Image: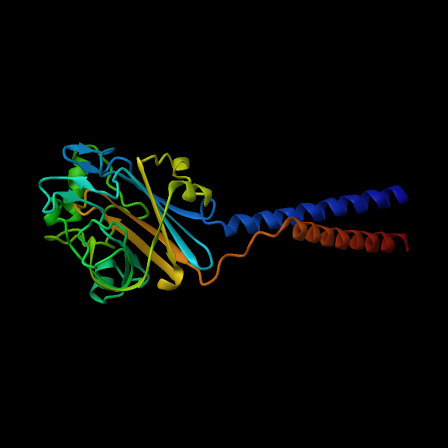
Length: 300
């Protein structure tokens, strides 16, 4: 009888530990976004248009990733286009750069949010054609088209048609290339640069080493562009809630969008080892107590 009782206690204790570990692991898994706290959107690797080349050229965008803490948002971009831009004599300034990064929390499509002045924007390329004076975070943003002065596409349908006709796969990361979130047709309808806005925050540029230390790893998705650009800003510059963020090249020769959410507070921290031990011990004690009560009922 004692042997049976001891085995029953050990079995109950083992089950309690397993359940506790499983519960903790599930909590950790659901707390993560996609990988090491980074939310990634990976674009097609063969839809950048550089002259006659489709895919792999200077205008190939591979991915964007966003990570947040309780007070800071981190942005990382992997592509072949440097912050210095791409020299092109057909562009009005002789150089084509990134457009601005837009955040839309409104739940409306891009053009509606733009008409309402409810977009947020980040100018991160100091040498681009943005309508605001300096790099930073802006609110009450309206957007404009700068493709025509940068030897670019007139609309998204034109871009998609050219890419597909040359064997490429047009994509916009988390959005399909033909998603009605963006206006697909019309003349100069790609809105890729801030026109007006009120500056509410600064951005801090981050080195690839810093981004790596923060857990960034585009290579796990085979996104291995020659450039990794990163910066951070204070989350108080933007609201919490769901958003769609996107940016285009100034010529619209590639683009990428990402869906995500900013929380008011950081996600719950994974328990420290001492906390885990205490939790397991608690489960174990509860399990032993339950086993003893069960055995007692059988004996008496």
